[in-house]
Length: 359
Image (tube, rainbow, N blue to C red; front, side, top):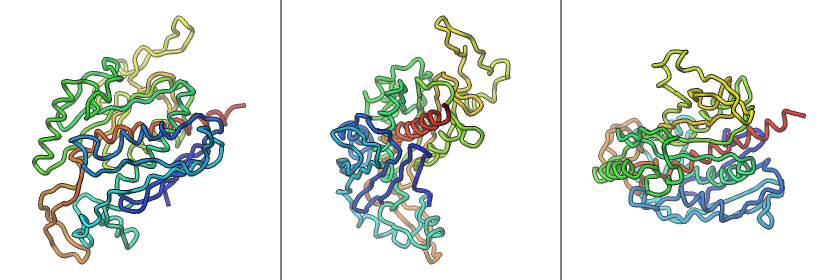
């Protein structure tokens, strides 16, 4: 089974969309880290449903309870267990799909693999599982702060509306200044209008979340199979609805020649090794080089739409199926803290692995 992520900073998540609760066990978090339930709650509040007019109206306060591993707001070096109870399930909204395979959902594949499935909101395949990741990611982010590492994800594209400015020209302090979490006000307004149009058309739309990691020291990464960019890619592609990952120059880099793409090294006035450009996205040979790490994550349109679609049931009969229930017209605003969390989990694990690899 693959419900555990990480080597030294390791998490195991559990729970289903319409079960009693979702939760996480964090093993390997060092003792002595100051962390409060309020800090974890802040991260969960950014992910929770019902937070704006462009997210699902499901009302979950997503209040976290820390069951173990933290005493007097300080980690104890023991397993940290956290749980979030589900309170606003409308399982009856899913009775019509008990025997149906929804287009582009995991209904068929889960049935093919396990011979059974929890059809209530998608069960374990639901993005509700990411509550646990965000809770664990808040711990990882706090650990990284002690090392001067910051992670900031934001929405850079919705449908064809794209924020063309590089992150270096943006005020990333404005990410949460609007409900779509795009740090450019005028572009955000266009994105919101497009999401509202998709919602009013009983449809959905996808886009891109960009992420910037700053303050990472040179030397993180474990070649050859656990290269830093490979692990970031795996982490992002494990998030529901993700269809693509690129870092640094990404696919645009294929248009360049090596003479223009190579990042030349120099030593700055403080004696620090730097690069004049950063097409490598802060990673070379699978190891961080001390420059900013930046990447893009592509999210497909949410698969549940409130329009009739053709599909089959579990006996192979052709049927017409229409979505019901409460769903996001666009996953991007709530995906931002999930990208933040998964990036933090990757970096925290690599920081600990690096410390363990040297005398």
